[in-house]
Image (cartoon, rainbow, N blue to C red; front, side, top):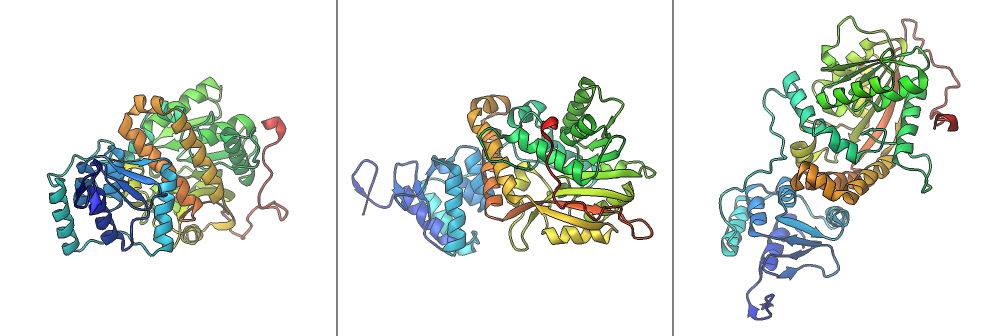
Length: 443
């Protein structure tokens, strides 16, 4: 017999019943300790503690088994983690890797047993409401209207939110961490990344750059201000376009920078001849079927012997991509592929790939910096966007850092050129593989 929270003998408490359900679903004992709403506990004594605050958490899992149900229980606060969320997720992934635990694949019999347990625990009932932060898109996949809505869901959360989360560069992509001392921070890593891109693209005064998916203009503004580059910047997010235009005006860059709030597919068919094209972590939003046409656009838009730089997240050949939570709450319709497939698609479009640089470890540090800011300024984030959305972002950032750490996701800079009709790529034989970072004067 198991003692209840009050200490009197009784049958199994809620935690013991939940642990049995978890073991049925995973095929292994739960690697985390479970504490239920009735005070009962079950599981390894020194493991991170999952706190099931209400019966509604179980009801969410009955209606939505697996990753999405767990995520929504966490987002709403029906389920919580005592201590470090990252450590709890690390233990779960370790169990999946080392102990043969598997994602839930519930048979009809499993579901019937889970429903019976829910009835005994008083958790059965109608489907709980979906959190308001979940994306709600309509229309054909990767149509212009749907893509605009998907981008807006994530990037138009508000400029105030991203100004709070990001450093002064407003770069929302992987940094390039060239030093490890305490005086070197996120903004330094982002500026070193921007200088790395400018060097790889061979940008200088008067160069013409097309920045597709320009975000809040970190590369656009840096290239124009530091190197005198003429930049055409394109984004689908209205909030981003407004921010970049404000910065262009404030910095007196009107003669160098043009900002468009539209789809890259809506660029003038006669537009082209750019010396360089950059797309920094935008290709993940293009979609699987549309990527060959996207790659063809990159080639069309750059002049012969011009350069193209694609910085893009990837996944392993068998590893999951974004997953149900990311696709429902963060980046709807996002598609990641193995790095080799992206290289093949770029070369299939007529570009010649000249260099690939992996930055996976750099993204762990980048996301950790964002997560630290979120935790340090938690009350401000919650007041700005609401507690549930703040919890969405905590789960996203903690899980994202872990995915890069464990090599389930990667990120790479791919440098390509468009050779001319004679096969000349226009690159010097002595061009370094990884250009030096910006000089002290540029800092």
